[in-house]
Amino acid sequence: MAAETVKIYVKDQDDAPVVGVLVRVFDETGTTFISQNYTTLVGLRAEAEFTLDGGDPPISYTIRLSKTGTAFDGSQGDASKTPQLITIYSPPAAAPSGTNDFEVVGQIFTLPTATDPRLCRASGFFKDPTGQPQAGLELEFINQFRPAVVDGYGVLGAKVDIRTDEDGYVEIDLYRHAEYHVMVQGLEAAEECDTGAIVFDRDVVVPDRASMNLLDLLFPIVKEITWDPATLTVAVGDTLDVVPTITATDFQVLSGAAIDDVLYSMEDEDIATVSAVADKVVILGKVAGTTNLLATRKDQTVVVIPAADIIGQPVPITVT
Image 1 (cartoon, helix red, strand yellow):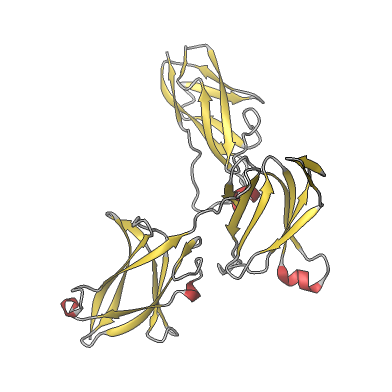
Image 2 (image 1 turned 90 degrees about the vertical axis):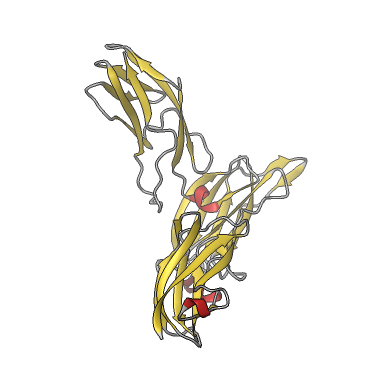
């Protein structure tokens, strides 16, 4: 018996590497935890590396893989449902493949689409504070556009209730462009009283799309900015009015410069300064040179991991 390097490679159904997969190693029975690691991109492959005892005859281990939205052996990211047996040889050349490397294929979850062109299918996964699937979470969608007629059919009913399944997954079809008030309640509290405990509630606007991530609908943040004009040049002592178009992750275009959601700043204020009003951003040239206009999320009430910068910034500023 000797310690050997073991590599677990993970790819999707299209042979693309899948990073961020949690790979946990147990003994052969799957009861004793040994080690864990996440897949990272090494070259063109996503791999998780371990040091495990091997032998000839080989030593067997059970591995479990999990990543939300990725299915391994039919699960949707629930590691308890993905046991796979691996055998480690020492020396590795004794293995049938000649290595202690293993490849696992995951089925990447793709957003299901609504079959009715008037509807958008919102879907997503929920977890509890320990990282486990949040089963039985109740979501209540309350119709804010009241009775309406769509393609000759009456749209009636005040609300629709749905619950996450055992994988923490839920999906619902909603009318495009419609407004809903959404309340989320915990299952445990709901069993204790008629109304349940409201985890959060908010108003949402459904985009004109066949599908979307439900979490982006419930927790929108600023995603992208485009600028008009696209090339920002201003003379010393002059000002330049710039009109931003700001799109959130729920595909809604925010009003004007979205000063409640976006904070604007200049990388070098000795060259230029920036101020924002309701419908535009104003740049003042101070001395000749180049700098960058920065835009960051002002509203930090929604924490997203991993964090991502706003697309479309920083944008170069030339002062002539």
